[in-house]
Length: 200
Image (cartoon, rainbow, N blue to C red; front, side, top):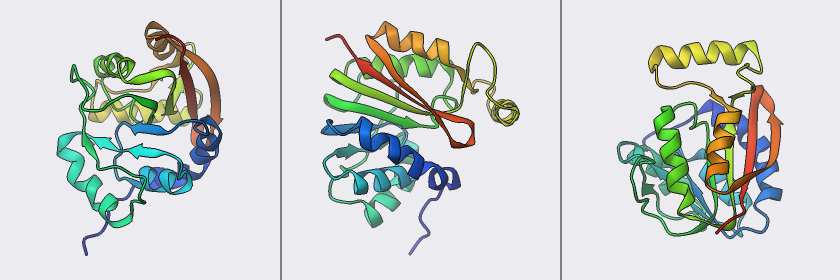
């Protein structure tokens, strides 16, 4: 059997994130995960949150890798993975109670981050949650020296990527009717940010 795709970062952060999701998603029925990557999060979170219908997604070119793990390990409440490009005007998914993305915002270009917010505004139910995990800057400042080095590495491979300013991301959320509920400080100089949709 072919080795399953694996991310050490996903392995390291899945337990701390699950602690947040247990409470945040307790009253939700459905979740869209943007950028499911290796599938480790989808399998882990869905397995521990059986009340949820978990919808993984990835860019078309990455679906094969994702499906290797889902085929081998996904519990029954994980739906078939969708091909999703956040830049598309229409997303191939219906309304959902929550959208979750880990370590995506700093990988995307800023223009794709803006398009992601435009897309999720159409699919989040009223009262729905957006949950983003990853590193952020605050007032233009890194939260650690290691995050500053990480941004140098990111931009060395793609100049359009980079650790985003929390204030700018929060402004995008506000534009589509999302209000910040929680900003959890997480291990390894990351944050888990939770917004709630307060308009129709």
